[in-house]
Length: 315
Image 1 (spheres, one colour):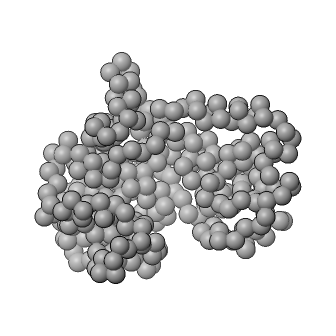
Image 2 (cartoon, one colour):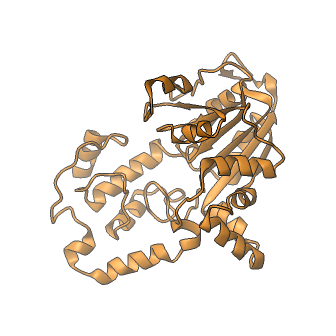
């Protein structure tokens, strides 16, 4: 009941308040005074350094431009680029700092503007159910998202809007965590994207695998309850078959480009260099990366353009 009340109070998106940490709410290991379990947890996390714990060192520009170039799409400075789910606007600024025509859209205002005049590059999509993009048809050459697709609850309207604002010869690239990622990046629970079961979250929370985005003072049970609710309402992880189905409703070409993504970032990412080195003796590492770390979906072409009209999906 305490956990339920805490969820009702804080919800799953706003955690601006927290209770003081106490012995009752501290980690089970801290209460039991058993450091060997803490080191075991660390060993488990550190046992997958290649696939999970390496920091993302490369820039979004190299991720997008380099990957698309290896796929035959030469991104030019005059191209209109949309950051779908731009957050603070950091990636848009990165593109604009080197002369590219980048714009950003998000459901919520998380912007950290350098200047009030920069607001012209960013817009809000107010309705989370239809993801209406405030741009004209056939406007963008490239649409990309970085760690955003897993937050999209309703795929059909979001993809329909992307197709509407994308030029006929344009391309989409979406970078997002795999469903079976070894350590889910939001809940910090092993395989938390695939096993969305409250006892599973509770088990790992009691072992110290906690959501770093929550304030201090929550017990393991409370962490588990909040993460379970968020997993049912705020995050969507699909299998490859499901992803291809949804993407294929609106795009005629659907592919995954993890190998190209890794090769595109060799010059400035030690993680990519390690993956590539392993691939020389163990080529299936790319398959493992795709299924247990990150997916890079590339979409282009129109699929059944008569399927929708006036922003309404026709089934």
